[in-house]
Image 1: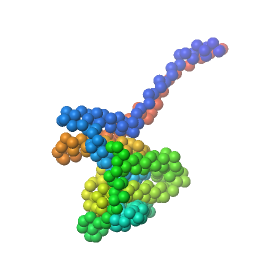
Image 2: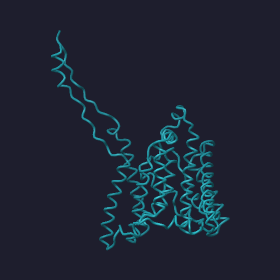
Image 3: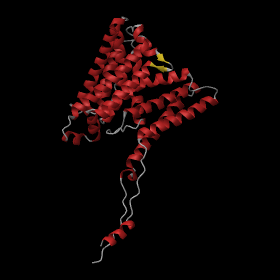
Length: 348
């Protein structure tokens, strides 16, 4: 009998080991490298240098402003929500921070606390309206944003407040070609990575975004998690507002016209976070922000028509989402294939 089993074993076919497929984050950074190479060649053909100190500083400056907002937006989208009020929060935070500082260096810390505190309150309102009143996130955050817009339009017709020169260093100081604001943005991103991958609230955000009902039945306080995500989203937008105040030297109520709300959602989706929630990463979001910043820099250097600029950005975002969607529904990516094995019988 042992001889029959021994002879039958070699005939059994083992299922071939599947190769590891690239994740969305890896794809984002491979695309970033490809875009950098192509963009560098195009700029060089035109007689310029994409990687000059001035262009690199501009690229990283664009990255820091959108990066703060997009990192916060990642938390909301991971919970199967979103925030359309972030652009208005940026404007409000810049006004609150600048008016509180009033040009006094000793009040800089008070301005930072006031701006972030007001931003957190806006996020708390967004989260409570969505979680407790069951209002759709699109409508809730748009409504809160319009309330802020009405306040800004009626109370502030132009620049307001005065930012002391010591705090303006946050917007202009560089370490080599790297702005200090970019370094701070990367630190915020690192904190976001730790939150999502090493803490219970981070795990809960993935669970709530994956399936709210299952998360609730598992003992997760889904409402609290959703509120926390929106508070963090607004606080990150508040940091972006402080950066705006540092760059302008005053608060700017018209920042909401920059389109940071839709650009942040585009960067998050481009970075591989699912709009349906439950899957994504801050690292991927930073990659998406970098791609958009590189494109903006190239368009400015080459003096590309703004219409074509928007068209190309839209095509890239649609192509990225289509690629991620295809990978999600590809049956070969989620189902292991097994082949029947031959077994030998033993004679009595």
